[in-house]
Image (cartoon, rainbow, N blue to C red; front, side):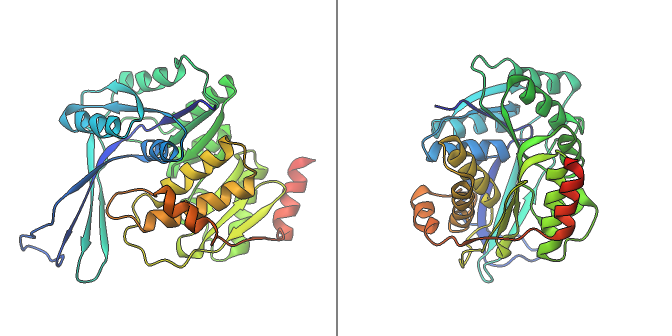
Length: 327
């Protein structure tokens, strides 16, 4: 049994509802609200739980929304390690326009955290009684948290002998890969921002992923490409998965479902290609779920058989860079 710690420094209560039309000024009458626990690491822990693995969800909690978040997580049977903070835990919400089927997503920044509160979150992770085999850090940084926070977590993972898995963006991602990770899961926009370049085709995407691997930024890069599928890049392999044709109900939680299923598969001993296949199936399964719901395992197992993966020959310029780095 693997010990897994899932850190969410900027958790949320995710709300989802619908309305006939989205129009300005006019008062909009919404349908019943659905509330789910949210934030990257929390969602990954929820997916792991659905696949039969327990993870400790570590997160700051403040105010009445924080109390609600804890109750929602407890109701799913997930173990929590909470850090009290003075600010109010954030809410995020998604609204589906019923006439068009389009989804509008609104994400709030989160509470301002003090230096002492940031330190308490880090110390909570560092003081876990059972040494974690995996440390997962996922989601944005709220105001007040230093940009190198995930880099500090990466160093801690190395000290503890844990595999560090990261899903974030912007300066937080850039700082963290300077320390290295076992696996990172950017989407196309996040990787483009990291590399400061437009990734217009498959070769440029592979080259960017290889650059991260060659520099020691990650052992594995899982790049999600929306309706174009996904890429998985290591030093020795490049695999491409086509997107499963699905009419999406909601896009909320697709990336977290992808990552959670991949971590589960790796943790139970599957090979990397199998883990990638489960990740793609779970990301697709999340698209079938309403509102802020995540993937359901029954949907994942059904879609798993539909995932098509092909090996890709590494572009010469990417192979040359890897060769020079290895010398």
